[in-house]
Image (tube, rainbow, N blue to C red; front, side, top):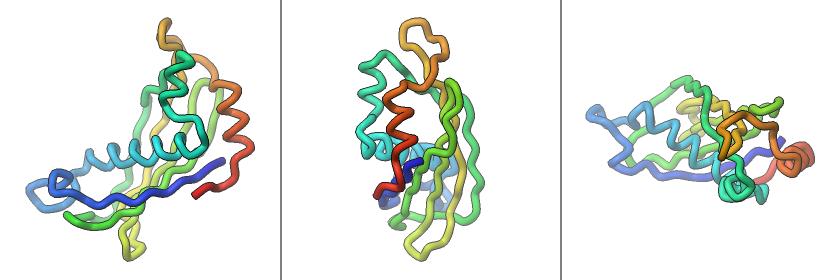
Length: 137
């Protein structure tokens, strides 16, 4: 299954009153790298949507290990953990430039028909790409 990394510089707006990245913003970072992973394998969200498939989050989990601060350069990593039926699990990690793990976690998404709003299986084209993809950078 594919893996992809991007870099992100923490902005002041990402931080809370304590000067650390606000806990909920890590899910936004997970989304950033997840989007780029799909774009990198030539199956961006826009393609899914044009095929009438939506991909809502149905579960999210984050394990916080260390704080990140304003101006830190973070490495965001996403990998496809599992595709089963109508669900896909995306595993994510955030690290700093010293190699320290900031947090790790995952989101689970359900493939959903845009019109009926009912679960559907992962599109066959995407499933084949995922099964045939090695690690990509």
